[in-house]
Image 1 (cartoon, helix red, strand yellow):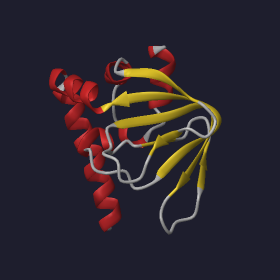
Image 2: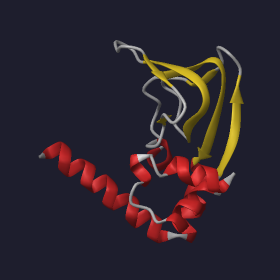
Image 3: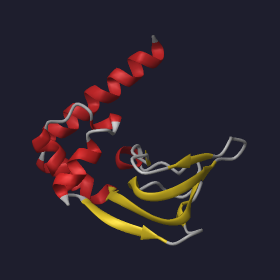
Image 4: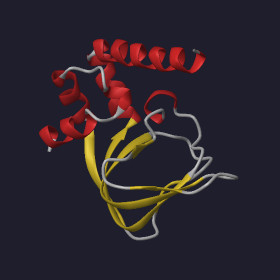
Length: 135
């Protein structure tokens, strides 16, 4: 699965600056998770501790006062949870069965301790995002 997941992770902006070797290290933290129709994948207000990429199926995102969004294969959410563990800002529910790649914050943090170059690359990516927003 790692090779397939490297291809998926390449399309996530947070990981765009990582080398293939580093993407393989991130992919090694991942596992497959299945959600039944209607299952809550994440709930607003809960501590964020997991990043997801939808591999199969569809998920509905709803935030208080916001417009609902549908996520399909290749879409992702929760990447900031890998870094800060802040509360979730929206509910995400499975619409039909959903198969997702899941990366937990604990495994990700452990990997970053072993590969500090990945942390530096992520910081550069995030700094670039902030600069674009300020620009």
